[in-house]
Length: 616
Image (cartoon, rainbow, N blue to C red; front, side, top):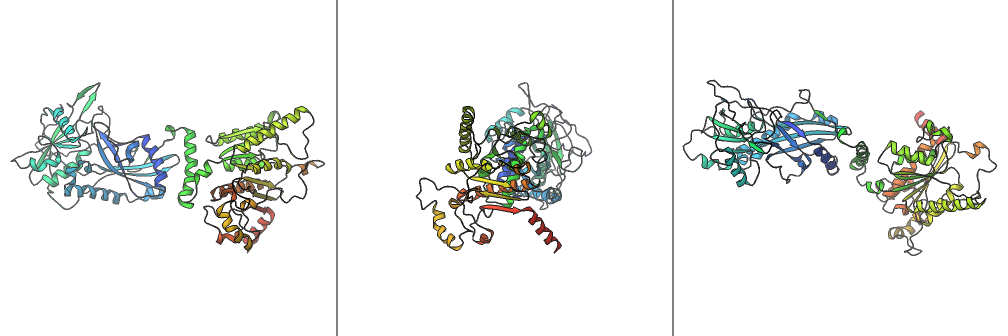
């Protein structure tokens, strides 16, 4: 058994500080708790533990793991709990400018009050309090951790420890725990101190569950206990004998011979009302007084890390800007993108959600500069199929996306398919596949080049009551619109939904064109005076292609996605009444405002308007 020898003079007692050991599970649980805490910076109670049986050479560790946020969770066997407070900041500036001195003083005062009131005698866990100050970023966490401690000094002596294991085990069994942080030799629990002091005793011996493995120094947990001893007992004793109990089990053999014992001279502070000065934050990896960086990227699947980052961006939008935003409706929606050209790429890149892309064209050399899901290599060898290449690139951009590509043709009015039995049979298969795809998805995007190619998908989606978002481009103009939905079969001809019917008459009387129920909205073809036909016949190359200003597709594609999200957030979904900006004051509260029928814009006039406003 290791022991220190006495010295005629007084030598200063030094303590080995804790080294924080924050398990990966703790950080994972913290990210989950952020869903509950959101942007709340109020302090949160957490719990850690420390162990006194580590092998020699290991530092004294204060461990936080996944159960740290459950204050009722059991402490691991043969470990002592430590109660702490988490301060999670929302910005790096708050993390840097947090009043760490004030936080330290508040924690010290809490410990001091428990010492003065005697609560620490009833529950010695209150002596081991720590603070955790964090700021979470996408690629790591900045951490400043501090275990509150008090300065002390002592004179070292030696003593033999007899029958320690049996005595300690009996105390643990009586208390119903596997480890006791503090106890009194020959008396038992700290709360029994009054019975212990009734006799004429000249010396008191206390036991401390010590996590430090050093032979010369005790661990950090002794510091605050010595303040309690000085405050409560220095009027009766000038010194206390301290047993730093080290309980180590190696290869199945229990060993306590490396425990140390020494005598500590108590300072004169019996029942003093003033709180001693608390010291120190834990030093960082460089030995300086600064935050520590915890990089979790190596411990996480990169795909899961990407999903977590994307998910956090959406949650931040919900937490502060749009509290009523229903993210589940957005994340779970399945989108069918018909067309993988300039518009299709822009919508898919903005959407980055659940999607299927349908197109039968191949990538040409002019595509990569206008269509952001393709690159030069995709054009070689005759070009890759657009739909398949687009789905592959979406997976590379964000592995969490569930995207599939289908290389197929859509039968169109004015484009015969009855050239042979083979082409006719292929057209039937294409129609069946198109019907199945529309049936299996929640929102249909019409992003195909020609007008007539949108006709069959629009008819099928209408018959299946699927919301349709349509986007079309001119040279410097575009239109983004949603198609109306048919009334559900189970309801009568005059009532789509109670909310609509109660208000429809009044709304239509006030403004026949500004307030149109969702079931009365037209589609892309409703204003046509002739049936769709072959728009490419007898046309020159510039007339066959959609020649648009390069930035137009990105604007229209983004508006198409935002229109879909607005429809999903509306209580009536696709049946939402179409309102104009003049009706904003009468619009029922929705998380993203108005849900128009269509958005049209002329890029040239818009730019001219901006220039005029700037000149004015």
